[in-house]
Structures are given as C-alpha cells and as structure tokens.
Image (tube, rainbow, N blue to C red; front, side, top):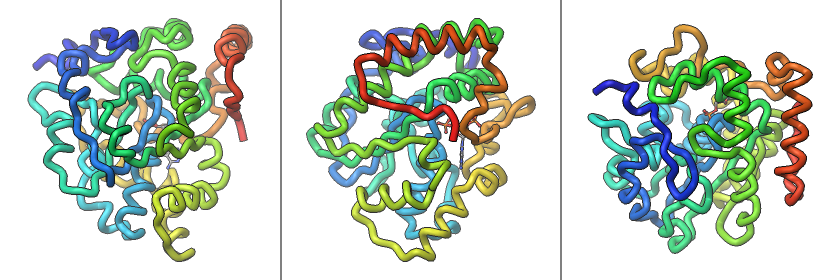
Length: 292
Ligand code: A3P
C-alpha cells in the first residue's frame, strides 16, 4: 500500500477527514459504545496522548509497569483509525474486553450515537488554537498519511479556514463545549493540565469516580510529565515504522509547552489570526489561555 494514497481529505458530513476514514465511515457510525467505556476526545494536537496516558494510569491503579503492557495506540484504540492492512480502531475496540479506553478526534456531531445512548464517560481536552496550529504543522511533517502541509504560511491559512483533517478547530472546541452539560462530558484544558497537573488529574478522578492516595497521584503526575513521556517508547510513537511516522526531523513529543506559537507566528500572521478568531469565537463564553 502506498501510504501517500491516504493523504486525500474528504468531507464527512461537512468535516474534512482522511479518505481512509471516509471509506469506512459506516463502521464508525454503527460503533457500539459501552456504558463503562472511558473516552478521551480532542481536536488533534491538543494533548490527546498525554490525556490517554493519564487515564490509563488511573485505569491501572497508578502502576507504570501496567502501562508498559503495550503501546498507547493499543491500550487506547483510536476509534476512527483506518489504514489498509492494519486492524481498524473499530475492530480493535470490538475485540477489547470491558472496561475499554477509547480515543477519538471526532467533532461532537459526528460521534456515534451509541455513546449518548450508553452515557459513556468522555473527557474532552482542548488546547489553545495557536499552539495547536504549530503542533499540527510539525505533525504533518512526520505523518505520512497526512497531506503535505506546504510552508507554514500556507498551512496556517488552511488551518484558519478549517481546510485540514478534522476541520475547523473553532467548531470542534465550541461543539464539545456547548454540549458538555447535556452528556457525560468533562471538559478540560491543556494549559490547565500544564499549569497544575495534580489539580486537573483530581478532576479526572472525581469524574471517573476513582479514589486514589496522594502518593499514587504523585506517581501519575511524574509518569505522565513531558520529560518522562518523551523517553517512554510506549507513548512516544517510536514503535511506529518510519514509513508511517517519520520522527527523524521532529519528534512526536516535540516541546510540550504553552506559548510556543510565539516562536512561529509573525506579527502579521498573529493579527490576522486574532481578527478571524474574534469573529469565530464571538458566540461563545469559551476562553483559552495562549500562555501560562
Ligand atoms: P507540541 O507539538 O506542541 O510539543 P496529541 O497527543 O494530541 O497529538 O498532542 C501532541 C502534543 O502534546 C505535542 O505538542 C506534544 O509534545 C504534547 N504532549 C504530549 N505529552 C505531553 C505531556 N506529558 N506534557 C505536555 N505536553 C505533552
């Protein structure tokens, strides 16, 4: 299979996604959620892997050895994942005994209905739009199934317009925010996790109805810190072959900070971004910090 053949983006109910997801969409739509599923939902590059590792640490009672049982993409299957020749996310999840951990980047309106019917617990993590843009740009350079991002200026323009995989960041974060009280959703922010991981992990524990000691909480914070995760091959995606994810120029675990956008946005790009942002976010109370 030529991985580059997967780079095409196709709208699914108006939201651009990889052609591979589009061609297997029916299986995602019909996915059977379970009431004891724990779901991590995000727009790409919002700290998904970080949140997945935290949730798996909670699931594993704070034992890092248990979290080394497999790579993160097997411990927390990616619902809509679909690459020919590999088990799809739906296949992986169907074969996983309960309770399952589930990762998804789907916008809320495209979530399979069964999640609402089963009232599964969903943790949504949002990250400020500018850091996501930068992180997504570098990610496009390492993931061979994503379209060539072109120069930063061109990518940023496409990102602002929502012409990237998973569509508009603005629609994604607002969609989940607006429905957070209608369903079993805990809405968290990357910047808060960065500022005070202990406080935010406590929110997750309360939401997941799990009690753990302070010692174990400290262990979770340490094990899921950027520096520790960066050298942990079970989460840093180094187990994926270069033909699919090539980390020779930039790492998946790249910087892991809030505010890196300042090293990449020009003054003109920032002004244009802010003007567009103000318009698109004028109808929401949702507030992001772009630095901490
Ligand atoms: P950067 O590219 O800005 O460094 P996702 O998992 O959704 O693809 O998100 C990846 C982003 O989260 C990357 O951002 C990555 O470095 C960051 N990240 C991963 N683990 C992290 C951690 N433990 N602490 C802070 N950031 C983390």
